[in-house]
Structures are given as structure tokens and as C-alpha cells.
Length: 382
Ligand code: MG
Image 1: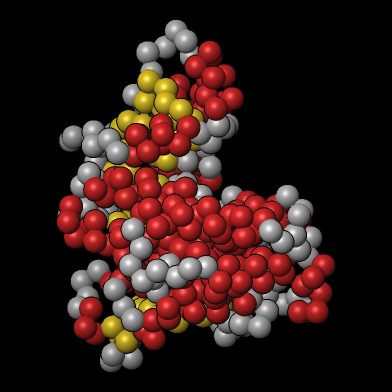
Image 2: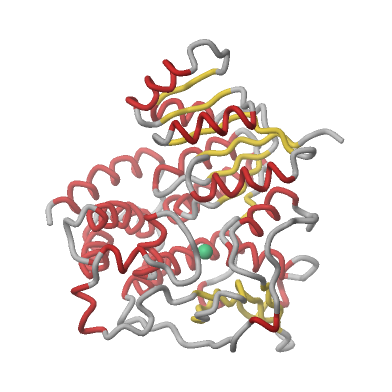
């Protein structure tokens, strides 16, 4: 059998590491062609030894020179910086690109691969939040596909297989509610970084952990679902489900509901995006129903988590609203991670950035670049 050739962007992050675990256990089916990381070159070197990629790209320039020096006797191609990442994501010597990048930086690599006709396993939801309409147009033109890696969207994708989209009544995105689901609202101003990083069910990178704590992540997932499944906003609902066992659901017109469930482990949706349409054997932990405590469901709390409302507002306005919201959130989260702003400032500043930017109905990539500069300055003006 011919091996599937893949590239992994963000290979030293949480999604990248889990993708390589999947690839390792399915090593007779996959060949790693390119890897990219930000700065963790010690881990990257381990990955290079194990998976023997043809090329790697390192974003941080200090780390790039360190790696160059360490691998000077090897014939691996090493690329540098943003240009390196864009170059690697534009190559068509692969069958599938895994985009495990974090934040707005993931958008152009997604688009590059799609433009080359390469299918993308998409963990970087920000690609669609930033530039959903541009990416959809590019997909139509090249015929490339997006395979969702986000656990909720993977669940919906799996529930929809074999179904007629005319029969869908609504998509039901489940969310754990994050670490502050039951915390008293009047204490939200005192939320510390450590508390916000401590997700109850999922072990994830720092940025997405904060997005889960503000529930901006769930808001972005609404936007992601909107673009992935081509359904109007009134057909996508959020249900809080603290145990994260049901990963999402689809309700049909005859009142039948399909759910996809399992232990919360990102390797499962990652593997499915890699092996689609097969559900092949995997060694991960399995759901034991008799260990499951009660499964419970609640309405999302928009007062506690105003970031969900911001996502709804951005879908109502479309154009650059999601773009501005996404860019702003990258910087507000970064400032919160650096202890420069309070937890509650994240939503406040995101809202102002989304409402006060110069809105454009059908942005192109240059408009988005200009907006990035404006939003960054705006967020740092607080
Ligand atoms: Mg998710």
C-alpha cells in the first residue's frame, strides 16, 4: 500500500505531538514529509530522528540558527521564520497537511495548501474564523477538502456521514463549560492565570486553555461549524456538557439525534482526520460506560461568558467581524498570559476591537493584513 504523505505544522505543540503518536502507531500507512515548529528544537530534533522528514521550518530565528548548527552534518532542509512556514505550507509533495498551529498565524498556511489542491486536517479553527469566505472560495476552485480535527466538529462530521443535509434540524455543539462554569460571577475579576490554565477535562496548549476558560473557544467553534457545514446560525446550538463524553450531536427533522462519544482524547479525532473514511484500530483508552458518572446538560451562560455572544454577533455581521474578533483575541490572550490584563478584560477588549474596526464586507488578504496591524495596536493601547 502506498503511504500517505503528510506535513505537520506546529509539530511540537499539543496537536502536533498527538498527531505524531497517531502516525507512529500507523507507521505502515503514513510518511512524514515536512514538520514546522516555533522554538522547541530539542523536541523537534527527537521528531526528526524518529520520523526522518525531508524538510523542517522553525519560526523563531534564534532557534533556527541553533538547529542549523546542531544538524550541520545532516542533509535535511531547514527553513526559517514566517517565510519558511508559508513556503512549507505551499508545497504539493504531500497528500495531507495537518494544521496544528495556534491563532491567526494558521490562516495563510491553510489557504496555501488548499490553493495547491492539498487536503487539510484542520485543528487551527482560527483559519475559518479569520477568513472563512476566502477559504471556502479557494476550496471550490481547487477541490481540496477540510477535515475537521476539533473534537466537536469531528463528531458532527461523523454523525453526518450517510445523511442528507436537508434532513438536519440543528447541530448541537457540546462544550465542557471550562474551569469557571460554576464560579461566582462577581469573582471573575480575580481569576488568576494558573486557575484559567487548569482545564477540567482536556489537556491542551496554553492559548486554547484560556479560550476554553473564557468560552471564546466555543464561540469560535460556532463560527467554525458555520463555515464547515454550510448551515445558518439558527441551526447551530451550544449545549454545556461538563463531562466531555458526548463530543457533539446532530438532530434531524424526525426528532432523531445522533451523538458521537468517547473519552476526551484528541488522538481520536486526529486519527479519524488522517484515516478518513476508515475508523482503524487504535490502542488508546476506551470509554468504559460503567466508570461514567451521570452525563449532564446545561444552557450556556452568556453573562458569565460574553465571548460566546461576541461570536454570535460576528456571524450576524459577517465580513471582517470574525477576523477582528479573532485577531483581537490572539493579542488579549497573549497579554493575559503575560499578566498584563485581567481575565475579564479579554472579552471587553475583544468586543471593542470587533465593534470599532473599519468593517469590510468582502475582505481580501491585504485587507486582513492591514486589519492585523490595526487590531494589534488597538489591543496594546489598553
Ligand atoms: Mg473543540
